[in-house]
Structures are given as C-alpha cells and as structure tokens.
Length: 315
Length: 315
Image (cartoon, rainbow over all chains, first blue to last red; front, top):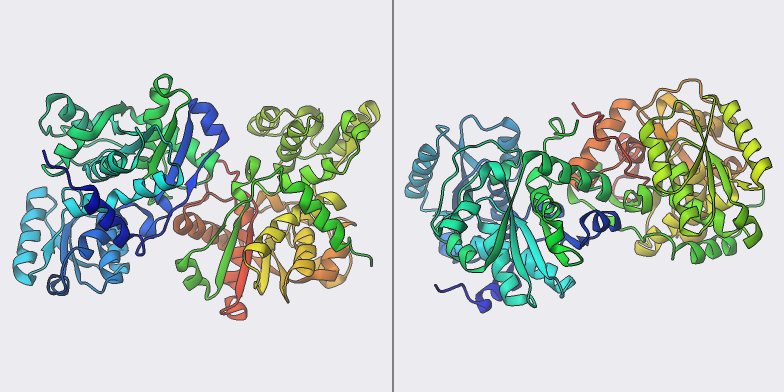
C-alpha cells in the first residue's frame, strides 16, 4: 500500500502547530514504579476543547481552499469531534454543521453550540445520521469530514506524537487508545517517520475489540456490543485508517473494564490530572503486559479530559 | 515588628529548590474570561506528595544541624503536613515521628506509613495530640515542627510564590487559601520582597473565618465551627505567622461552601486538573469580588490535589 508521505505529515505539523496548544509531557515516579517502565504522558487533555481531536479538525479545514472553506464543513458525531470541528471552524472563520442524534445529551449539544457549531438533529441511528449529513452537504455545499476515516484528520492527529518524539526522542513505544482508528493511524505514521526504532501499540477495551480482531483477520471487523466505559472508543475502523494500522501498528492489547477504571484512578490520584476513561486504556494496556515492556521508554497519548464530573466510576 | 529577612527567604529558596518539583504555572482562556482577570495558577497539586506542604517540611529539616537531624522530627497532624514531613524526612534520611488521632482515617495513616513516617496514636483531642508529641520529643530528642506556626516552615511555603514571581514578574496580586496561616505568611513575605507592587490576598471559607476576624480585631481569633468542605483550612492562626499576616496581607475574602464547590468544579472541568477543595477557595474569592480585580494579573497558589475520589462534592 501507499502510506501518506513523511513530507505531507511534516507539512500538516507545520500548519497545525500554530493553531493548537503544545501540550506538556508529564511523568510520575510512582507510575514508573508501578508499571516498571519509564512512561511519558502526552497530555492532550490540556489541548483546546480538551482533546487531541482538535488537531485533526484543524488540519482537515486547513487543507480546504478558500472557496470550500466559505461553504463550511459537516460531520456527524455526538462526541469530542463535534466539539473539535466546531471550535476549529470558529477559529478559522468557517461554518460548521454538526449532525447529532436527537437523543444526544443536552450537555453535549450545549458544548457544540458554545463553540459555534450549527446543530442539525437526526433520528438516533447511524444510517439516519449519515443520511442527514448527506442532506446538509447537498443543501450547503459544505465538505463532509469524517471524525477518524479521513487522511487529513489522521495526519492532524499524528502531530501529537511528533511533538512527543521531539520532547523525548528515544522512546521505544508509543501507546494510544484505539476507537475509530484516526489517532492510532496518525500516531503510527508519526512514529514510523520520526521515531528511532519506536513502535506503536494500541490499547482497546476487550468489550469492543473490533480492532484487535481486525488485525488478526486482516479485514475490518465490526463491534458486536456497545458496552464500555471508554465512550470515545465505541466506533469501528475505516477503510482509510485500517491499511495504515495493519501496516504499522505492532500490537493491540485488550483490557477489561475494571482495568480501565483502575488505570484511570491511578492517573487521577497520582498525576492529579483529569482524563477521560478512553485515555486510561493505553496505560491499562501497559500495566496488563508490563513484563513485556519492563524498563522500556513508553510514550502514552492521553487523548482527552472531557468527563461528566457528576457521573464518575470511582467507588 | 521584625519580619524574617529577604536574605533568609532567599537562602531558604536556594536550599529548598533542589528538593522539590518546580511546579508549572498554568493558564486558561476560559477561566480568564469568567473571572475578567488574567489568572496564573501555580500548580502545587503537582508537587511531591501532592501539596505545597512539602516545601515547608523540607526547609524546616534542612535548617537543623546533623546532630538534631539524627534524632529526627515530630509533628502532630492528620493532613498533608504529616505526609509532607514523612516524605521530606525520608528523602533527607531523617526519622519522622507523626502523632495522629486514633480515629484518623486508615487511608491517611497508610499514606504516612507509605512515606516512611512512624505513627504514634493519641486520643482524638488537640490537647492529647500535643501532649503525645511532647512525650515523643522527650523520649527521642526529636525536634517538634508545627505544620504552620514555625518560621522555617513559613519560609519554605513562601518558595512557591518566589517561583511564581520568577515566571510571571508583573503580577498585581497573589491569592492563597488561609488555614493555619503558614502558606499565606510565606507567600506574603515572598510577594513583599520579590514582587513589584504585588499584594497578597487570602481566601477563607465563611464557615471558618477566624483569619478574617483576626485581621479585623488585631488579635488571633478562634474558629467556632468545624464545618467546611475545605478540610485543609480547619485550623487557627499562630503567634508566629499572624504578625506577618497582619503586616503584609492586604485583604481576606470570605466565600460560601457552594462557591468553593463551584470554583473547584470550574478548575477540574476547564483546566483538567485535580485540586483539593482548599485549593479552590482563592479562585472562589477572586470570582466573588471580580469587579475589584478586573483586568488585573492575579497569581493563585493551587495548594494541593489530595482528594478522596470516592467522595467528591459534584452533583
């Protein structure tokens, strides 16, 4: 297959970096002890709107010419990408049309509106959302941007790993969560082009292990269940990101729900940072197979920090 | 009165800084908007053991000569200072005797033990704790260190504000919580000596407003109640820190419990950091009187991040 080139990834980075925060890389001696590794957390929970998705959204809009930008962008999402695209579009003076299921939580709709996103509601099925997005495209001429299965979105997400590798050049591994596949595909490209024998590992909820099974079978598998606390990871891979993942991702490690919550709690308690359940999945994966990574230098992309404080999993 | 000198504070800083983390100063455009000020959060929740108290504990031990260090240090505390003194002593190879009330939560005793502190239990009254501490001093020859009413502890706590003023030289105000008075006294000294027309402001729970009343009356007033979510602030001022506070603190602003929780929630949600209720008190104070501080540059000492995640106040 043909991977997106290093030059294209570098160009994305050069353009994206002035529009996003350079997030810090944090470490914790206690978590190093617990994991038997040297762990470098790239804290995208401190990113604008609270998640790495801002990077992909910015990059996808930046690649549009003025004529397309004027007409706007469309996506269907009820999660972080809806907010990211709204804010990225607002910052670049572009209209953003967000298709959300009618039963999406009010707090999520309000967040999109607060960033200037124009919401169109659809019936709460994937099919209805896609149909509504198509109608918006036809009506407005806006460009549809998929949250994870879009090359420019993937390249944008990869810029977090580029920064991580600038700050810590000698990483042996970079772990990310794997949901729709955009973050891990971008990270794998960045690691391949900018790392020094660094490999990319995915962490995935065992309850939602489509990516694990896809890597085994070589074709895109779908999820059967929808039950995981890692709500950002309840999505399937796509035909643009899967070939990159198949080519460049070393391994996918599956973790149980209790392991996700325990890893999340460790991060909150020991690092004093607020991270989403999805963000704790790669650290849970490291802890699960820690013998395999003993004394290695491991980067972890903390994907975001947007949680409902009224509904936390800690008992 | 005679204030501790600038030279002595500078010497404390020179000694302390290699034993503690240089914590980051974080900002948030959303919180700037909400408060109508430019706010610089000095994040001592990222300090070793999770609170600024590490600084005072380290400084107090460093000022002891070898003979005294060998005999160890004693304190009575069930909070952050017990943990801070245990860890500081461990890092400097000194025994730490911690007197804790017999009914202290197991998790707090375990935290002290995990840092190497040697616990002596006492009856759960202030008098019994003080008597037990005296017995330990007599038995071991160790030096008693009060958590807040000790000059070297005060100077150590002041080093956080020195760093904040190094990073942001043009602050108009520095806000801290006020409980036992050690942090605000040290901060006021640092602000006086190292700031440029910078003033120190205290935030205090209205339910526990001994410092507010003391500043009004000119003598040390005591607390009548014990009810505040800001559990680090349930203590009274002392005869060593109060004269410094009286001389150098500009104002104390009282805040209601609901204002503390709301400010805490804003910090968690918008900055994605875990902070204690006590840490939210100065930000709540700024929000309460925001007209008075409009467009000013305000430093805030985030005192710590040790919370029980199983028992959060968010509804």
